[in-house]
Image (cartoon, rainbow, N blue to C red; front, top):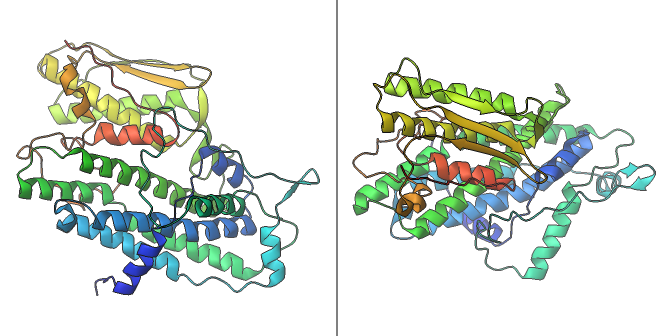
Length: 419
């Protein structure tokens, strides 16, 4: 039996969508996830059981409010239903009945060196992103109320709990049920990127549009940025739940505190060259020279970094082959130079693929920057893996990679020398 959304559910979603999301930084997640216990995980589950419905509700509302008939496209409606169903599953999950004493203990911060530990470090503004650039428009809450929610949210989640003594089994049971629910939701949302892409294609074909306008572009940026955030919170929580049974000292959930940049770059180069050989039927793809200190490491989500390097390299190699012709014996070498400064680690990828005319540079960041008839049709079940979705020819590689870079305070820039 297929799932149907009720009008009561849509009313509840509308109410939740009036609250703002609470931002969480990489450092906060690491500080929080270092000593995971039943109590800490329960506190995280409580935070997410309130935070995720708010974020999911924003997406349901925004998908329903899309302009110009885009909200009527079958694929967009399917995605909206996935978000509504996930909202319902989280909000319907039974919470355990807790005694006053346990409630009190859950609110008490842990003690470090005899003193209560402080709330985790604050977020820093990303200089590449304008304040509010990727925020949804929340209607109906005052700024005082928002500030109060934010403070409560941070207090509830980001202070390790009082861990002296055992926790009742109901907490562990709830943690397990909550984590299983999140796993189901994560699987349901795997094909979201490809299905939204399919919805935009349906819209372009129906409206005979070659390109999408800036309103839809801004919506896609907000939507995909929010998706990265939701998946980060879910993935981190599932990994922390599993971490109690198996642990790698360099990992806190899905965050690696010592991400080795050279190793990831070598892997991305190998994968991009393989895809290039496969696509053009080459015996040997263009060579890539890597300059990077083998010991260089930093705190990051390795999956995000791999994805950005792979997508950018794939673009470079494609440009080199198309510029020089697939029958050429010796292609110019593409350089990958990685350097560490005081604030940033910079990865520069320079190819000799002919560059891009200056007038076309803004279009590089547009989703679906391809003509209607050239774009292949997308089967949403084709490949549900988050990163390996078939985006060659969909114009998704660079805009989504830039969102991954910006999500944790970085950026992706394109500097072109035409010719």
